[in-house]
Length: 452
Image (tube, rainbow, N blue to C red):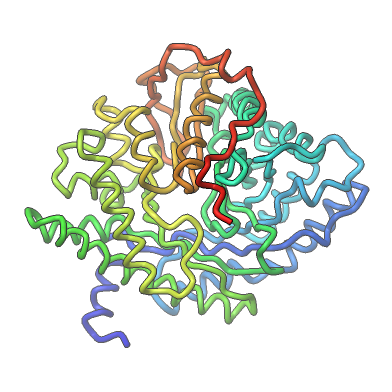
């Protein structure tokens, strides 16, 4: 039971510490929309999304008013389109991408995810068509998000897919050059992608999910940061306990909202993703949490250890607050979306190599990183391969969302707006990896994947 102190703490967190529900995401299965004619398939997809999601935004707004809890985004995730479109007799799946965009606009949501393919062990013809259409689709739509899973701990790393995605990212950046490569901000390359992730750009509705489901993503870096300011100079035991207790309160709020949305929409409750998702707003930064532990700047020595503590404590506190914790659940480090990360990059303390080390202990990976526009496809693929290896070997989800900003050089700024924020273009290693990427094939699964 909540007491008056709990209620007042929650009110203070909302009013002064940027606590919010980052997203209510409605997952929708599109398996029954398959049809040989792509226009018919697109129409069925549009109709089903509009039918199932018709009350999502209104319900979210009603819960906001009644509970006084900000719900920043209302989103939709769908079955990976490469699977739905497999029976379509067409080579251009961007028709379906436009149908998704139109449905999202009609429903009033912020984003729709699931223009996706799962190719960790190889390609179907539908996978190849879907991936080939990603640049065009992301250039022609505004709300569609795309993801491709190229590796799993069980299957290893599909290096042919890794090489292909480097080229896809470059083409996407080129087609959205007028917006500083914005299309790449809506494209994620995964290892060990999860089926119930409510966050964009990587959300899709997995094969093991029900017909429809409500997944909620909470946030609250500002709350954790403020709590740590009150234990300045105390031991790491105290720091860990403080983060755990704070994560518990944050997740309980998410559980309440998820249960209310599930009941009102008549849709099963899936999971609460308790990831700490930052924003560009001051006081809402994961980097500032790490600095509150005693680091001068995020990225200096000790940053990885501090992030490991934070990520673990968030999970320990969150799992006590909800019976169904899922998604990614940890601490995100998207550079352009975190004002502390942005400052650390500008100061020269935080670089890609340090970020890669940090991704070994957090969710999710190299996220929202801008690099020079002349970065080669092979270098981007090699960055993806490194991050996929971290995920595969450590049996965790990792991802790359990288923007080779057209006509930009190291130190230049790119602006994406809204939650996507802004980024300083970061240096990449100038040594080439082309011969490595050209080998193709699969990097085998690690020995510890054989658990049966």
